Amino acid sequence: EFERAFIEQMKCLQVGDPLDEATQVGPLASREALRKLEAQIDISVSAGARVLLGGCRVGHRGFYYAPTVLTELVPSASTYNEEFFGPVAVLFCAQDIDEAIRLANDTPFGLGASVWTNDELQCARLAREIEAGTVVVNGLVASDARFPFGGVKRSGYGRELGVYGLREFVNLKTVHIQDWCSPETMEAAGASTCASPVLAETEQRPVRRVSASFECIINNTASGRSAE
Image (cartoon, rainbow, N blue to C red; front, side):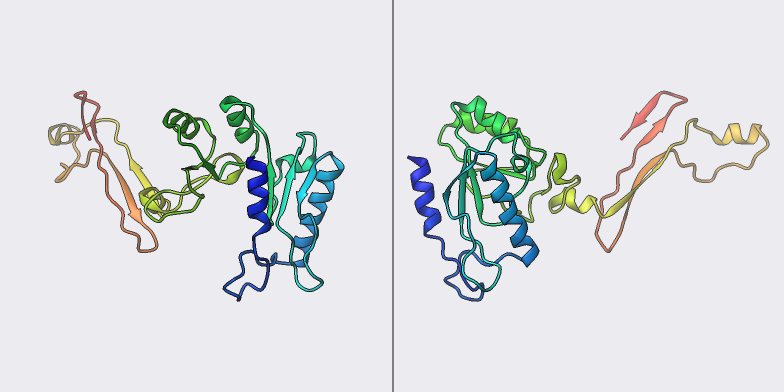
């Protein structure tokens, strides 16, 4: 039932000029990108995948490719762990939530995942166990300036946006002084006294005009006292 409904919705997508407001699917970026996508479809079909919709170019001008739906793509196919940079959807059938999680995580990538469910317990488990930098429930994956955005596994490291994104633009500096040196100790050693002794601090220096908060960690190893 889901498969039929999904294919019907894919059929309704309007392919055309990206400057036309009615267009929903535009062309690929280059001829090379189009050829690569065609090769991926051919490899998938040769390995046993079935094309339920599309699987071909659109027209004779431009780099247009029809909205395509594949199914039965086997793990032995080289395209099983590849991204299709085009209007291609691959359907997998899971018998239960355990298999759904296994299929979702059976990839070297992990930028974003979209989960659709009305079951609160399933929602909590899927959000917790799916290996992705972002999990969106009952919605499409999209970045939001208020929240950190980034991937796991081969989808990169670090985060942009949000507070964590701002911290990517600062340099962290740590100064660690092992022993507390009092003025009396300095005088006894024949050295000049410290007018303003510094214990230790961790400092973030802003880069590219990005404001940063400052954290100070004080550690007195001689007396065993510490403050943060």
